[in-house]
Amino acid sequence: MVLASILYAEVYLVCMIVVGLLLVWSLRSESRSSSEQWQIRMLSGFLACFGANLLFSVFQALFAGAGWSIGVLYAFKSLYYLLLIVGTYFWCGYAETELRSGLHANRLMNLLFILPFLVPAILVVVNLWTHTLFEIDEAGQYHRHGLYHWYMLSLTILTVTCSGRHFTRSFRESDPVRRAHMLLTASFPLSLLLAWGVSQVGEQIPVVCVCIMVELLCLYVGTTKQQISLDKLTQVNNRQNLISYLDYKLATHESRMFLLMIDLDDFKTINDTYGHLEGDRALILVAQALKEACGSYKLRPYIARYGGDEFMVITEGTRSEANELCENIRRLIREKQDKDAPYIVKASIGLAECTCGMNPDDLILAADEEMYRIKKERKAAKTAAEES
Image 1 (cartoon, rainbow, N blue to C red):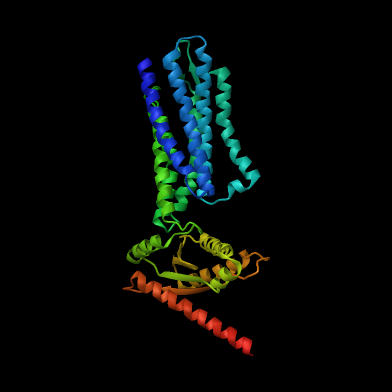
Image 2: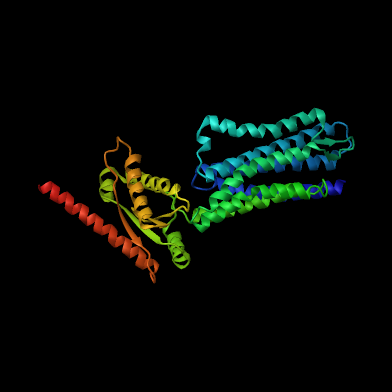
């Protein structure tokens, strides 16, 4: 039994080292988005969970059979089960922020989100008297009981709820990097199911920590890959990812495809007159308008910052749908502006349809020329109005 406990502890120690490294790298990240904050909490929760079970294994190996050790072993194992709930809750919070649901911005909704996690927590606390979840005998041996399955079932159901939303929304996502990350996030309940199933082979198999550690490692790598493809200021895709995606879509699109070139009017004046911080706020405002305008589509259009004050949107559908998207973008830019701001953010949008034989440069040039034509017409109309 001592050798088995030592091996069990070694596996947990390895998992703690891996998760600890992920936590350190996350803490050293320059950005602190909501999803990154939840990711840090998730890693911290599971790290503490693994630590509690590691201490349980060490005490079991060193002091099993001692009368005073039973209470300590119960404390460590109960803490492990409680921290597993905490880590799972933080994963659900991470999953919700990745969906940009805004759930945790509302205190009432956040409270309602927490309540279901109290059910497995109550099972753990009550077990201290009933021993229906697990039991530690006089020899220091750990035994699971029937309520363990209800405990694991409750955690699985809670994660499947969030996972299902990621899975269904992934089919609406046009960006392959984003879609892959959504599917990877949705796979978390599989780690619980696998751990739950394999644990039936033997109670001394440390499969829970291994499955969760692998999932956390994959999530971290997926998040890092996604961050590489994002523009740090506006949190939309960057130019490098745009060109790759455009190459991909030109070769694979089946319906009519359109490229929108969005350029801010008089952006240099905003920077020169009010400073670059105000210029950054204007860019963020436009990015938020683009996200909201594209969010309601069955197949979400692809959004990217091309450079400077230029953005691009790639969408599939009809010409009328593309024109409607342009109008929604203009409307949302107007609606989102701060009424007290000393400037007005306006955007010119050039719309170009992909035709047979076009390469990325041809399509971008067509949208760019249309956008500058609109700018020129608007400027001419403004000059004529001033002269009259």
